[in-house]
Image (cartoon, rainbow, N blue to C red; front, side):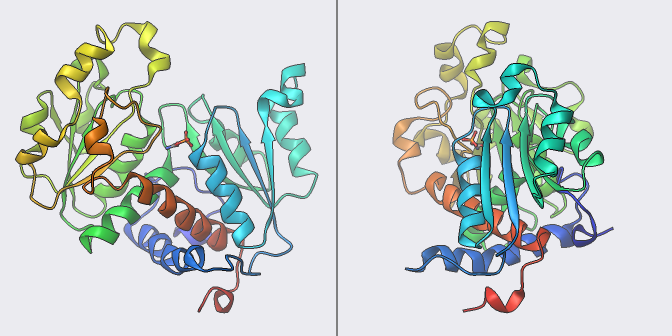
Length: 313
Ligand code: CP
């Protein structure tokens, strides 16, 4: 079943290549709208969108909010740590409360893998997964793919290295599912303690040495070291991690001349990426954020039934 016939966007594993192409192609005119002086089209007027984040976020939550506003949807953000969740209200009751207010679509982030899937089965609202535990972060991977396609012209058959904490990374998983559908060679590299067992079953190549992994790659996607998991003792210290895996300009000599560096943010400068590289022309980190708005506008448009003639010109 294609994306347009499904109710929710829960992950890239279940999308096919045509679905992803539809979303990325729809994001193109959305990016034009963002560049306009008047960044507003009426296509989703009368539709209502709620963002419900049980984990912190800057980029994802804000970009969904502004994406909805650019398309004229009414957007409301439930800040969980100032909500009745703190009084003990269950997830089920929280979602039902939002549903009966008349919202059409809910964007959800939760620390437990599978929570958006559970919610999607129990509500008439359409659900977009904005990150669930270590499972998937589909809209991040879509904006990563849009950014790569924008610079490289095509996603087909690229060599892409994903560097860092693969074990806890929903960004890595969604990128692997998405890029594999375009014949990309996806390599994962990081310390053995941050590498999921049997990761090769997802069709990727596993590396422990950064230089080896970067040999001949078109794109490097650097993951955030999740400081909140430091207490688990998965590597000795941030300094030692940086010694082995921090991406710096000198590492790029191994990669293709026109290599592109991505980072989903937020960055730990000096841990997984050097400041010099993060601020260089090779890195497209700020463009990724802009593209995130365009991709999320495309998803809202496709999922809430926008009129095509209202996004043209
Ligand atoms: N990349 C990403 O998901 O960033 P936020 O946590 O700020 O949303």
